[in-house]
Image (cartoon, rainbow, N blue to C red):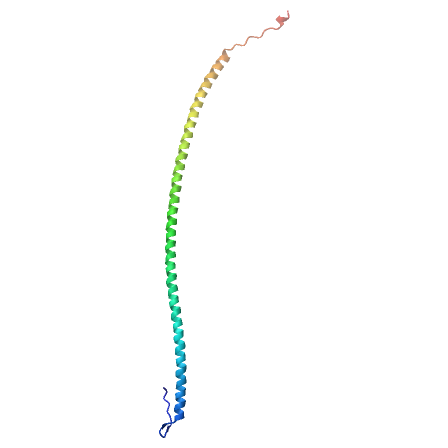
Length: 152
């Protein structure tokens, strides 16, 4: 209450001043009570919202942890698959290189055989040509005959 002074009268204070002050204080109490009720209601609403936000936060943080774990699992699985692919590619490359080397060896063996056979055929051809040359050298062409002898 304020430091208000009331006029004194016979048998106490001025009744009208006191009544006015009491009425004013009742009005203030009523206003403050309404504000208190309004603030209490608002506080309850805010506490409910806070509770809802906490629940949402907990739900979302749980979902985030689950999604992070799933992402880590996916990354781990992808890394394993990538390693398997790299290993398979490496194994396949080794097989391909081995096959290519085997094919190259086979081709070299064939080329070598062809070279040897060609050398043998060349030697035989040289011998045959030498024989033919010798035969040509030994071949005697008859001398020219006088055709006039036939006229007689």
